[in-house]
Image (tube, one colour):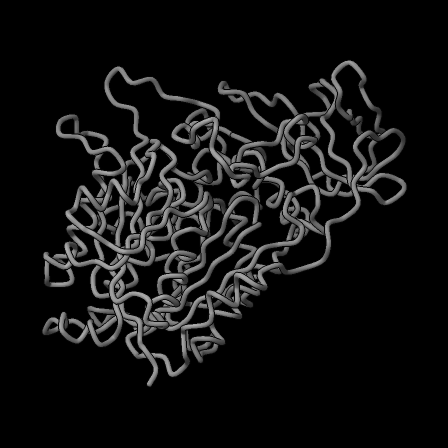
Length: 498
């Protein structure tokens, strides 16, 4: 007999920016979300009898052992505890693992939770730059804090807000549209996300923005990194937490509440790109591991894409949604929702933990009978790590016990990394680029990726020339030839438009 995996409880908390007293740190937000999940399950005492606790690693504060500390805080004595690695794929990856352990009989009930407390209050200074990682200690043992190579970092790429625009510029070039028309296309997509967030009780902002507001550069909506304006970037400095409780189907029966449908986890998938870093990618408009993770989840759930009623496509930046739609084959006229929360740009992007909010929101919708079946995708770094999960009001007919184990053995997808040249001189051609802007709205630096004459991938900065930056900003320059030289003093490649 197949063991079903059920989400029996879910909870979300948002610590508003107006709140000044009795503030929770991330651990406190996790505990509060866990209590809400227990109440949703109809049995507050369930937390004291958990078999497992899995924590999405916080990045706004450091805890020596977040799972142990949370267990003590909520009065739990689980026999299994785990803390994820870094990456937005983490919540769904933990759910996939928990489902496997439940299906194999290793556990009977598992809490998956995470939270961040980033918002600066009172005299607390706002931390620019790498604020996302302010809670990660310098001696952190893992390479999952690294999203770019040393070569890329030296040329100015280390943060998501500078990396994802490279995908978007390539998509812009493909579209053939003017800058203004393309920005309005993004705005038309993002206004739908804004509308959803405005109705979500746990959203960080209730503001609903129009396509023109989002897609038109203004002093209050300045470019951050071309082609993204401020309203196209994620809301990182938020205080939000979420939790779900997963149990076996048998245990869920004892927790069933009248009027609430069961919420089944039907299948998940995980994949990573062999081309880990941006400089290693064959192109900037596709993601083979995203498709692989979704295909696995659907196959294991015994469903097709047509069986899905709604999606929460990971939405750190518009390009992530556009590429996901492409890989899944979702056409422009597909009426199914792409987000359940409003996405990281409007609902909020609490570090690694955003997707747990999507899962909790989907669970609530299924339990209330508003949704039959939904698909959640989650990604880490620059389209590198991908996890997907299918949730439904109907149980699966497939065995869940081996899926997470199979993904641990076979997770790499796609072609091998492209060949790279560290120091380049001569001619080349732009494949994609971004321009970083100052806080007063002026273009500062151009960051180019392209192919040199020998077909090797290079990364370069532009010459310090206002005319060059203006050309890059006003019209898409993908495909344009450049003259390249290596600057010994700066230790970097410099490109001049030809």
